[in-house]
Image 1 (cartoon, rainbow, N blue to C red):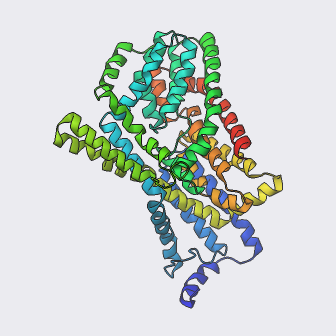
Image 2 (tube, one colour):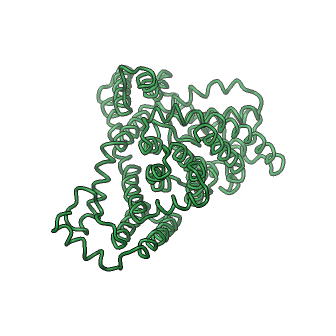
Image 3 (cartoon, one colour):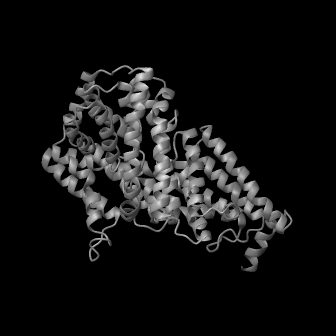
Length: 478
């Protein structure tokens, strides 16, 4: 390190004695910061600022404990400036990589919503369910159907409300109870799939996979037994609750029918547009078409252009189609403020966890307990699950702890994919057990019951799915 830089760093380091004692204390102080940050998130303090200030404090602790320097390269020469420059460095690297994928995916989803393609996708896919007449068979099929919709619709609340309008009346008409129907609808989004889901894209990036590879090789094999087990459990649980506690109150089906007709304004072929990027990515990738490949942003931009041209021909109104096309960029801006900034500060927080020695503490604890990568994945997924249930959202917990997986995996000599898969899925799946989750509150309001009543009906299927998911990942990828 240049002498000028060294002089500016030393005063901060000399505040505390150097040596093994100080270094052994710092990880525990870091855990205290982690607990306080978790408490603040549970208490609904602004998540971005909680993670930013927590990361700032963790990195200061690391400096006081003897970290020298904070930044391996690109130092400003002054430790105080480096604390902020580290965040800038993280933001720059994220926006140039997975951040841009998430931006474009969010923009594409917004455009699909603007032209009615997402709504049409749901209505077209729901049509075959109208031929099923067994009440509990249709419950299982609706759960599987709704889960498949999560391939292109990544908002749990948005997907639930689309299903309320489209398939809820079908379930009621064949004899299912309104509460059983609501419980199934509230819990369908249990896995956020790449490339549509921002957290899935982040998970893939952190373990060095292309989003489509993460989806095909790891998410789908894990999802099949998990979803089937949850569908079967829903049938048993909802039947038991119907006999024990009654059926609940049905909503106004005529009003829902009117809303459904509103979803069918766009032509039926618009249903193809939301899945078109996945089709392109499944064909043009290194696993199938090695000579011609396509990444996620390219697929999204290409499909946006194709959908715009088709919409222009259908509407025959250039001004309206141009105005609707701008939803792509408005959606990108919305994702920047709602998701991407959270990923930035979560990465800064995770860097603090690493610098203060918590990753090393985890590794030594895992070795002491005889935990391998699977055991570590189960522990970390359980932590994320608890935070998800308490807060109603697992995004902050996952983005914070997910960033430490590469270092934990490197310390264990593994690729970290199984750990990441467990943690990412837990963050999505256990949301439906939380009475403060947006999707539970919305559906409970629609069903005219307390959110706790809804959670009673979703908890057992979710826990069964969680156990099956852990077992599947352990057996397939452990």
